[in-house]
Image (cartoon, rainbow, N blue to C red; front, top):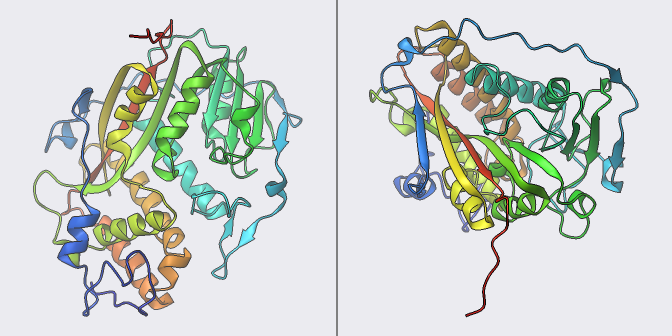
Length: 387
């Protein structure tokens, strides 16, 4: 599906790096944008064999979430001055107030909040209702949820651990008004070196949780290092991220120039790169954890189908969740300034419709990898002995 460039406006390297004169993705740009080195130094646990989505095991005994808890509309909320300013783009999307200091490019309006909630359901369903995979046990006193978004995970984990203090931090105050009394909300830019949440809370967390976050920040390694400093000895960090590359085990994905979802993934990569973010960093997170000092670093990978093509009902549901979340991501990414410089409204709609149609095609058996990385802060920090 050709999507001709609107203009010659710069994106990355002085010309439109993803399209040729006919409006097609160039071979060089596809090769350059899709290059990433993967980590082979850590335990990789793959769930779901190739071609075997229809045989995925279903846990019929998975319990329902118990949301009964004491709630309060007076949970502590800390606001930085930027909170008071929302940014409305010329294309009608609303953004957080940290535009000058932050690389996060997605909006915070109701459509984006709905998309975040879809991803929350996907993450829970993928691991049969569990909120994390770290082998930390049940004796948690303080939990930090970085990039908490609408706060669904934060609230549910506070219900699960009613005697723990649970802190949710995000760029935007879009969390639940009614929340458990053991929840504390912070609105701040965790990447701001001048002044941020990390300057006020140190060295006392049992678990730091970061979901769909590290692939959306400028300095993920630096953020992991901050998490290390703020964990108790023996505490755990866990990250959960989709790797934005569509795979297939049976070569059913069409060529990229005729497959809009793959074209969109390249455009999303460019939009994030314009903000200084590498959204394809997920396979390398384990290396960053080890570099920060974490031990027992483990990776668990899950295939997530893109669309309703699996026969198994559970996997079909996961595919529909990812499809719906991706459909909502298309207009969010295409509303960024770098994309609007190169595409007119009709082209954006064409891409959106093309993605929707392709992801609903049950003859195309695409999927993405979901990475769960976790690591532990040593019980006793190693001391460097002078030579």
